[in-house]
Length: 56
Image (cartoon, rainbow, N blue to C red; front, side, top):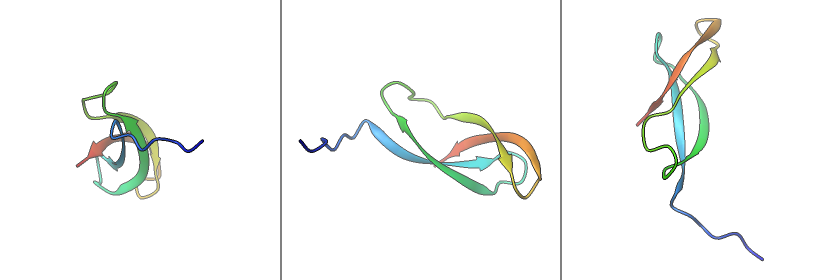
């Protein structure tokens, strides 16, 4: 059986807060997380772990 195409799950881009480089893409459920997502990820430009925030 095929999976239903749902509008609740969207693809978001994460960008570094310090250097503003957009490095990561991920998905999130819009119903569970309506606010902007924030994760600590490795930034290759800064060469350290930094906060990455959802960019629109």
